[in-house]
Image (cartoon, rainbow, N blue to C red):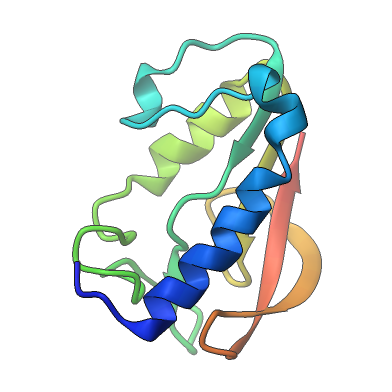
Length: 126
């Protein structure tokens, strides 16, 4: 990974956000790996995959979304991911970008990227 001033700034912001969770850290489990390896149990499921891309004419384009060559939506089976989300026990929160069609998303809020570009965040709640 190439070090940039922007990378450092974004890292510091994310670090502060994570530190806010320290009082409840014993109740949070982060899983690094494939989501299909996580056991289904009663929990709050927060699922925030790389966003599915939608081109202006409404058709879905899944060929990376600007994060990097290895962290993008190109290799995500969104139909399978949607079925996985629907099958979770407990509260399910799934974040996406406006135009995604793999779950029945609803409007959530206007947002800005770390590069100060506007986009509309949508959410699926179960």
